[in-house]
Image (cartoon, rainbow, N blue to C red; front, side, top):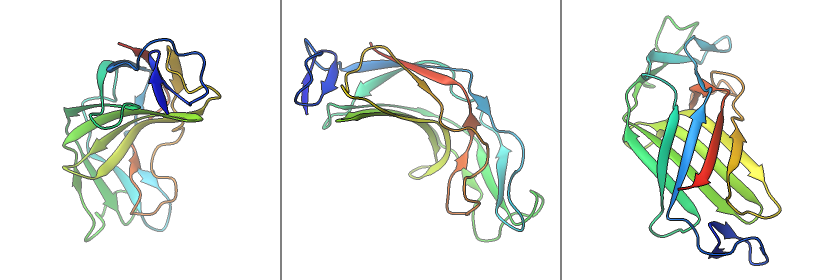
Amino acid sequence: MIHRGGCCCADDCEFCPGATPLRLRITFSGLALCTACYGSAPTNYVKWSTQPAAAPSGSYNLTQHPTDPCVWQYEEAASGVVTWYSDACSTPLVGFGPFTVAKLKIWAGVTAGQIDVHATWYDAVNPIARAFSDLQATATPCLGTTVFANDQAACGNATGAATEWLTGAVGGAATIAPA
């Protein structure tokens, strides 16, 4: 990878005059917080027992990672509690959680052939619930103003396994531009 022109580029990228941005601005719109009980019988239901104030909304300034110029990140304090249940959200799953959200992390990265964006709620260390996720293939991995659609279309967890994080928000879009 070479770094020029307001983007990170594959070595053969000719559309990048200049330098990789130190900051990106990401703007989220239209994300819907998942609020009900989600899962599949006979076990492994999940829901926010205490919801975050809202899904990510508005603009955030991501700063370039100190050791990887093709990664930008943002972090802020957040709150919420995710509880896993052994039935339709009335009996908590013994020995697994609940999990308290401590922060929201927003991340964008560019590699040859793809641009990846996600927003995830974490406890002190581990991912708890994903708010936004999109991976776009690109022939020229250059960052201009780029619009991403949330790949998360269904609330809950994809497999019903208690080892998987909760899809905490669905829908919406994110727009990224050099800041």
